Image (cartoon, rainbow, N blue to C red; front, top):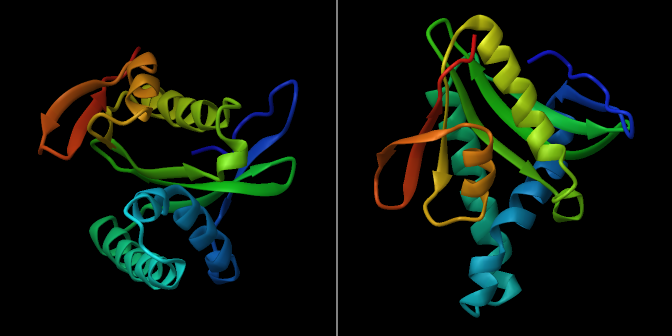
Length: 165
């Protein structure tokens, strides 16, 4: 993904994640995944280690399953606000994961990040695929961006957007 174009209100960019960013990436991961554990009544002393275990497993799985993928921080005006993982393959693009700190949600940042990847996939004439939680709020965003369901495993929807030429 190109390092994104600025809007009239802020400068949005991507920067490759490095080892020094691990604590921040874990913070975003935790902020976007802790609610179900809290709703289930688990104590914080259990939630923290559980999230850490899930985070490490996810990172290992993504890097093994998607060699060659880009793992980037989402930066707004030079400040990290989230992350995006994307694979730009020869036959298709895959949006592996995108997450923002809750304080930065609802501001159009996620739409701009995904929109830039869509534009890149369109320019290459390739489909962009992703997975979204079934019944989740994010599905509305994906529909607005032109994604269609191509599979359903009962938990996640496999979605795809064909290129616009």
